Image 1 (cartoon, rainbow, N blue to C red):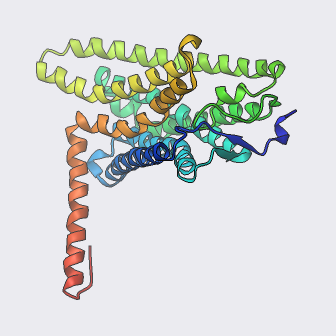
Image 2: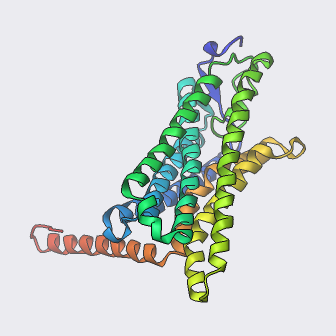
Image 3: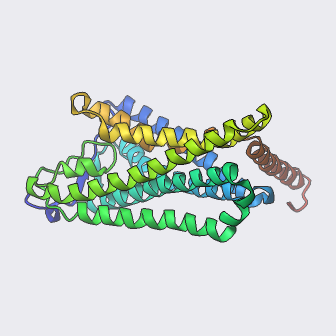
Length: 325
């Protein structure tokens, strides 16, 4: 193939060759995606409906859940459909859309995690200025900046990647369209054009990572100066979920893109890609609910209310009367 315009579809890497394993992959991904949608959906519904959770921390958590839903909905459904229908194909436009959406959601999530580290820093290190530094307007602007930066970043990467001529066929060695795998299909002389953007991206993410680390260094120093053990425990409890999510997100993504070539193989790349693209959106709601009693209570209140309403409607229907919530 001489250039990208002659390619109408790409071939994704299958998880298995046998029909039985393909179906196992379908059901496994179905379970993971349903768990991610349910967990993040509960957080979105709870934080939106419960007035007690209308605070900066939960506002950012709502945005994080929206990004997680978008991230897992970008890659998993197509992989499930390919396993179910025993195919590998994805259209050229579908691949471009997948690249754009995945980079958009994942990069916006990292920028949002950077903003959330600032939220935790202000809450613990500057509690008297919390309402001023993180007013409703400031929170909306910071969240919008994370979404907008992710959009522009994804647009730049996608436009540059799919403008490169492709000379190495159309087989993508990954279960979704991933930029490093698509670059392997490009002509050698055009590959360097993307290297500059990758270098800029690495610098940008490094700055965000340093900001997160610096925030937590200052935060832990402030927590250790709290005289009471109960106060230190409460402060750590509010920081642990965010720190755990940052660690999971950064460690899996860094290993996926920085692992040495000596241990790289199609099967290893497949497993690592699942770890950084599928697992975090599914476990993030669990991480946040494990150490957050306020969120757990609010979720249980919403679930109990929904169950009570459903039971009331069923009983009303059985009695022949109209169901009213």
